[in-house]
Image 1 (tube, rainbow, N blue to C red):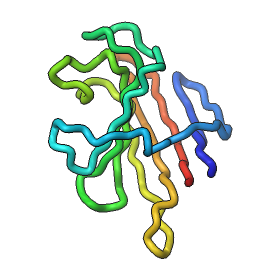
Image 2 (cartoon, helix red, strand yellow; image 1 turned 30 degrees about the vertical axis):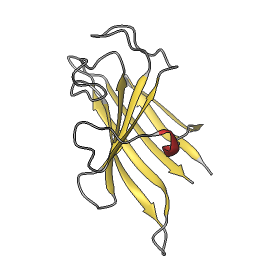
Image 3 (cartoon, helix red, strand yellow; image 1 turned 90 degrees about the horizontal axis):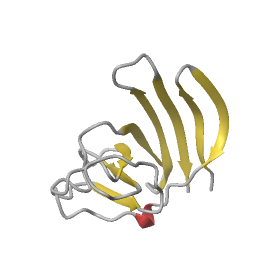
Image 4 (tube, rainbow, N blue to C red; image 1 turned 60 degrees about the vertical axis):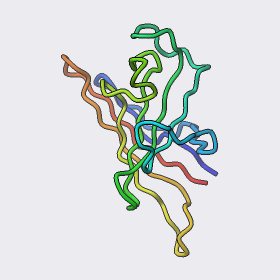
Length: 136
């Protein structure tokens, strides 16, 4: 199925296009701590997107979860080098936060997600936003 980033903008410019991405939930695991209530994460160690932080880990950590059993969810990601050892894989600093909504068909089967990220970068006037749609 289609897995796409629909619109992306950052630093004063906008790109409107369909860009192929993936969201493969089979790679996600349930963390043992903190309490794994409605939350899964994935560490993609092959990506070396960061180079500074509190530890030598490389890659990106992805989280998806919800606060309850509704269709509203959150999705975020951050560089794996940022969390302290005691907090790994969680991180409470600057992340890429998304509000996600489940797409459910008439018989209750999960068909995908739609989501939006809106982020102001610290100490400057730049912004970032993305609209995403993932379909199975």
